[in-house]
Length: 433
Image 1 (cartoon, rainbow, N blue to C red):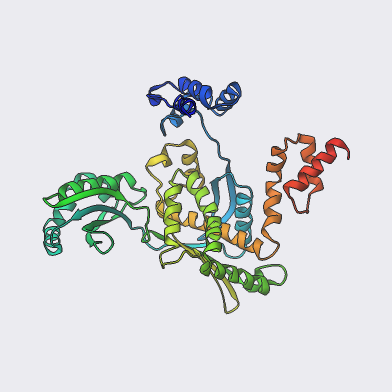
Image 2: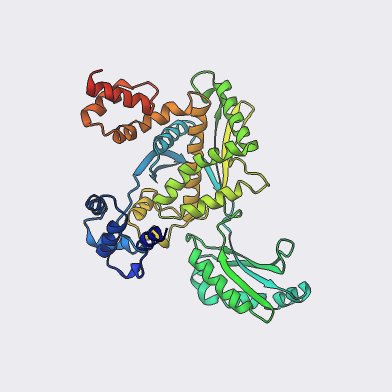
């Protein structure tokens, strides 16, 4: 047992961050790679040959040893509020981009997508405990509230020039949930900036100014739950335009599929995951924080006490209507949006949108993805299209050569694709029996 412990301890290291990149890789290879030279070569293959560009990427995070590529693609033909877009998407999952592009084409001849920003308010909180009387705390808060806002003037000056800043500060009593627990609940407008650093700087200044005997500040931090930073996207068409055959039947099945996601959490999670396929891909491509967006969206799906669908569908007076309402905290300035070369290019492709315009584009991408998935599920089935797109991944896993890929792609054209069927066919090609 002591020998195993010693072997495990030998893989621990002090001062790793201070090592040069080559030294980090050598240590990693020595301790964790099964094939040292092959592992080192793989890392080198993904290093950018432009030293200056590589340094830029290295400095995004800590302890970098290489780059991890995610495919960067374009879904064209989106018509949003009468304006044409080609939407950049960064994602590794098969069929997502194809589904988005097909949906865009479908709705472009039916009036396109309509999108509206409902509100853009963001939230941060100072969490603290106070054991004294609630009345004395409320009186103290009211006496210093204006001073708390004034204390942040040096931080908010530029933001206020752009129409943003602190909207309000509320004292919230949460002692029902936790003993002596209160919050300063602060709302912000951050314009075209996502605003994380701005909000956190304001909160820390507010917390410092709020200090007095008996108040114990636990932490000051923005919230990624932004139910008042909302955007709505929608499409509609006559029921007979929904599908080439049995249009009314399939439209009603589609509506029922959404209703199932509203009442059944097991289905709702997968339903919303499909929405986030589209949303996260655009958020990542534009250098925004897709993890924050996903966390906020899933929290919003629980706002009424049960996890449910983020989209709604209905048939009214012979019209099929499909929509999404979702919180999206996004920025078009600051962070990686102006630093990562591909994020900058994504913004250019999207015609340099404002934060509000980007919210609309991203919401549309999520709605499009959900439409594609539900339409496939309720008509031809999800696997036919998905496995067709997954074919190349299967062939690469099986190490098929170019000629084999061509033969198998042709042989399975129009057929249902499965890993076992491809493996069996490839074996027949190679062995003749």
